Image (cartoon, rainbow, N blue to C red; front, side):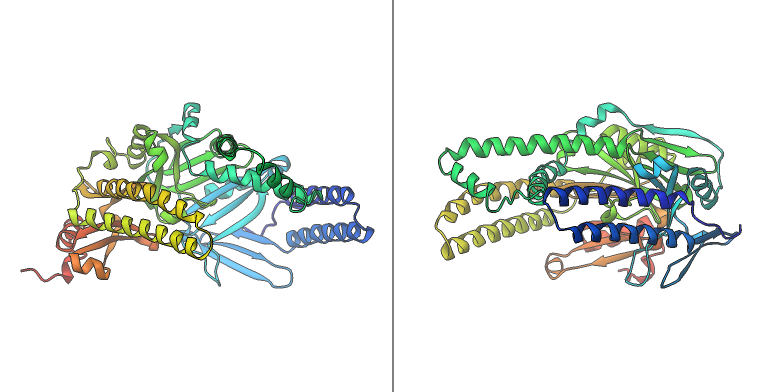
Length: 487
């Protein structure tokens, strides 16, 4: 393929966003009766950005050859990046509302590497005509294997009931009040000098308990509404299909559409994740464990490419895991996990007590330095934190487990987000055995499975050292055994 430009409509798309921002800025300046030079500065900045978008389009080229994907870009500093096609792990096609209006889409090519100070984690073509984006996607994902074409999962509107079972409810509720403060400050209401003092005077004349209850209810309602809207935006028209040639494609999105394609030959297993609130509601997420598909730490990232299912019933999560792995039953469900020693339970209880004691101690210290009112906060916190810490520690202990079933090694851990991870045994290329100082005293260790591409963060936590080593040697014979001295 010869060198090609991005689609010219991307200039219009980006300029339209800048025009909308300019209109909003001019409206605020008009409201606040700003000086003429602020209007001129805003218009000049918008024109400069539009000119930059035009020059960026003129100076950007890409091409796909039999071995490489190449991209040249830059105005003052020219950049030439190339990615061997065999290193491409995922292709993500996204389109925001303005992109959709102009018929273009952004193609994000992932290589499975983390971003550093000198290299970027992915190469982006921003943007191509929608047919060209789909053509590049199908060209870059290698087609090999079976020729079946089947729908694995389709979004179900009944699953929206799981949206409020998320920590995002509190975050979105609190963010609404912060956003209201910023809006008032932007339009010149000056909340620090007018609204907040008036509110403080009003609070001093009323009973605080009903006010605090109403505030908590309002925050909860706003958060639930926000979580429902976020769920609809993210998971609208979700569909997971197995395409001809052996690749998995997940498409979703209402305003910002997204399509992620993963090669099945890169698949190393699956993960069923159960955040605490979602677990109480009987739901779970399903993620792919694949080179280039994101690690456990990346699952909350906007560019996470490993999601295989929205929050759904636990049984559906296991069913999709089995379909993706081409197994009759999901290894995350069929495995018989080995319980961990009571030393692991004791360790979790000890950490829970230390965390509670530290929090209460800080409150007592602040009470001694500032106001005795905090002493009441301290003893109330103690009544809550110590029992809650015991319950969470016991739940974390019950969540521990590991086992082997067929071609897979399975590990489970976590309480605030319980993760059950099934890894293909032939995908494990190494083991890491770690011991803290307290680990060594009790004979425990953390065993970590290492997978190709450096994506391994899959732990067997707090297992007896000899048992962990024997488990690793049985799961993947020959990897760890060559370093063992057998008695």
